[in-house]
Image (tube, rainbow, N blue to C red; front, side, top):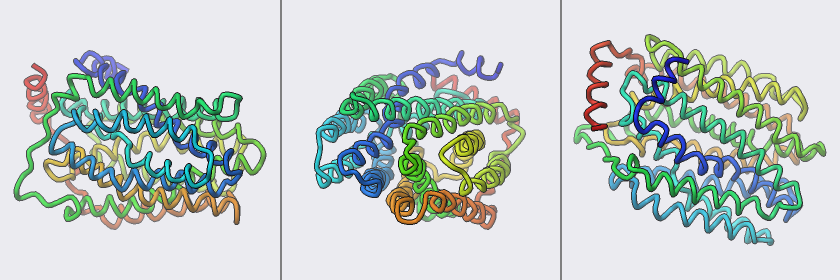
Length: 408
């Protein structure tokens, strides 16, 4: 853990973690808040899945646009507009009762989603030196995972209690606090977008980005189905409260996995680490279709979280190595546009599959999608070759000096 102690001694590390934390808790609450709000108002799991799907697809289709805007103009005014707009939409949704109104507001909510995670990720590159990036990404992944534990617990507890009408309103308050804090932070307001290289390919023409986008299509759909299949499975079995247990197990072990990835030797290239972890991830998804909303799905969810937390760290490193110059936010934004769009389709399909066929089939779909994602990465490994580079000691030293100059 010496590595993490050294990381926290770097200026502005605590600022990024604390400022964004409440907003990330809000995002951890959104999916289940919308699900339970819609299911309770319409008495339909399928409609609840559709509401999540509309929210996801609206957010994902505009993620690349928001990222591109920030890569050009910075983070200051986009966050200043989107954070309060999103909070207002959450409050409006909390008062909605009709099916049409809920679905419409879920869609509009996605359009106003502030890119909190997109905003934080490129800031690490200017806050910490190159040789600390893996550890910083690991810490960031662990924090996001923690909010994915806290958020669902808060959302489920409130939604299944007499205070259920406050679920979305509390999420709105947390977004205002966290999003506003990040917006006010000097690190975010002073962030200067990268200059684009005139010879650099666009994101969609970049061969490495094409591979990541194709992989994202499968992963997005598979995990979109999963996100709805878990609460749907628990609800259909009459144990809706176990949804929080399952997702909490995933989140807790996701934290552990992310932190462990941060301790992996920098002598292991990002691409090699990602491919190895991806193979293990596929293996642990295989029992999904044979689980029940009890200890079996809790254990499986924990394993998925453990491996998935580590995988996220290496994925960010690979992306940072292969993305076009000048696309610090847009690269991840457009990847999310692709992955999130398919996740929305998966969420909408997940409710239908769970209700009309079976939750087991829905969970099995996730495993199948992860398998296809692995095949895509194997087939396109040569396009990701830039992520197989291990920085030399001289490169690390130069990065540390550059970082010191930026923080003066």
